[in-house]
Length: 144
Image (cartoon, rainbow, N blue to C red):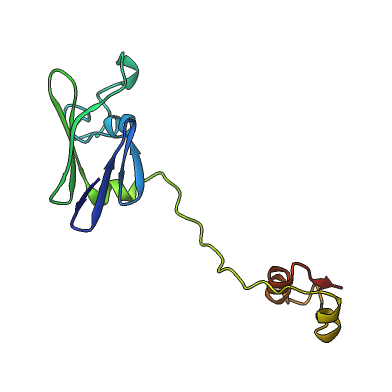
């Protein structure tokens, strides 16, 4: 793992991770921005991955001046340079779902329920948050 300017770059066999987002080498190679891979004015792809016999492999990977630089293991030499902002704006890993804060569970028995009877909730009157909290805390809720 290489840490640079609070950015994390982690290399593995099939992909690298930049700031918690995975980028597979085949995707990076296919999205190379160099003139050898894309026509400079039309941005039409020139390379066709299906013509390759092997999957692309990086020879070296570095992060410098807010850019990811990959030298590919092939002849003739080929270098891909990706601005960090460009990569992160195209990251295909899903954004993490917001997690609900865990609620403290209330253990109960008959004596506790007799002393603290749960409230009945009207299903249709908009008390969704209340009865979901009760469900999370007690493990059940009473709906009418």
